[in-house]
Length: 481
Ligand code: CA
Image (cartoon, rainbow, N blue to C red; front, side):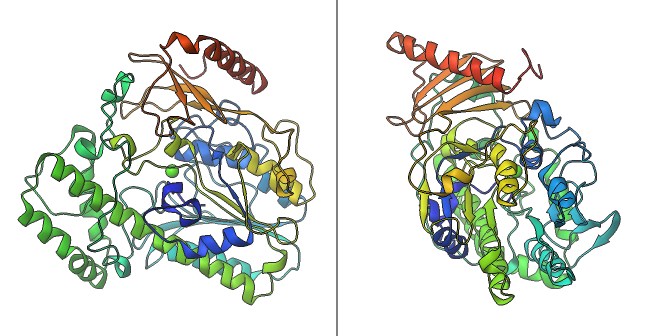
C-alpha cells in the first residue's frame, strides 16, 4: 500500500505522466479494479477501514486525530488466530500500537523520507537510507526469517508519495526537461460550487515554494496554513548525512537556477509550480514501483510467486492539479478513487479489468475469503471473490457510500453516494449544500446539476438510495457534527 498514490500516476490506469512497469506487471498477471473507491478520503481513516472492514463511524477512526482500537476485530487478527504468520512494516498512523501482528516495525506518525525513525515491536530505532527502500527491506527480511511453512500475511505500507514528496537522490534528474500536460479542470473557476473558494489546498496559493518545491527562498511569501512548513523542511535536510545533502543540493540546482532566473508571476508561476510538483511526486513513485518490483522478484526467486496473493493499493487517491488542487479529502473522483490491483495465481484470469463499484471496505472480507476464513457479521464490506471470475456479476452493488469527517484546510464535512453514472454530495457547511454530477457527460465534475429542475426525479431517487445506504451501514443521524 502506498500513501496518496493517484490512479493518474499509474500506467496500468492509463497515466499520461509515468510508466510504472513493475505495478503494470502485477496488473498484467492479475486484475485491475477500475472503479475502486475509498469510504473517507484521508490517511488514518482509510487504514482503519481496510483493517476492520467497517465504516469510520463503527471502527472509531473518523479523522486523522482518532486512535484506532487495535483490540477490535480486524482481518490480520483473524488470520493470525487462524494460523497465519503476520507482519506489518512501514506507515501505521493510527496512534495505537498495531494488534494482530507477530512482527511490526512502523514509522512514528507520518514518518520521514530520509534516515527515518521506526518503532520496532515497541522499541525506538533509526535506519539509514531512503524510506521506501527501507520499508521493503524490512518486509523481505521478515519473510526470509520465517522458519515455519505456515502461510503468511505481510502488509508493506509505504510513506511515499505523501507530501512533501521527497524523492530518492538517485531520481532527482528524472523528468528534467519534461512538460506535463495540465488536467482539463486545472483552471476550474468553482462556479456552482462556491465552497471550493474556501479550501486551502490550491497549487497556486497553498503549495509552498520551499517545503513542497525545494527552492531556497527566504523572501517567498508563506501561506497562513504553511507557517510550520519551512522549519520542518530545515529539519528534514538536517536529518540527511553529508553525502545525501550534497546529492540533494546538486540534484535541485537546475530547478533552483530555473526559478531564480525566470521571474515567473501569475499563470506562469502556477504552471511552474505544477510542473515542479509533478516532478517530485512522480519521482517518489519511481521508488515505489522499483520496490514493488523487488518484492515480485523475491517471490519469484523463492518459489513463492505461484501461491502468493499480491495486492497493490493506496490509502486514497490524490489531486494532481485537477480543480487546481493538490491533496485529497473531497468526494471528487481523483480523491475518491484509489488504485486496486490484485494478483491471485490460478484464481484470477490474468489481465482482466473490472468496472464494478468496489471499496477499500471490501479488502478485509476479500482476503478472509481467499484465506478460507469466515467474515464476521460486523464487517460491512463484500468479498470481491465473485468478481475474480468472468463474466460480470449481475448481483453486485450499484452504489457506494462516502463520508468525510475531518475538519481543517477549509474542506467542509460531507457525505454522498456514487453510482456507475452519477454522484450526489451533501456538504454540511458553507454555501451550496448539494452537488450532483453526471459522470458520463462530465467526468471532470465541472458542472453542478443540482439546481436544474430537469434532474428533480433523479435527485429524489439518489437521495432515497443514499438514505437506504445510511441505514444499511448504520450511520448515525448526524454523525460527527
Ligand atoms: Ca494518505
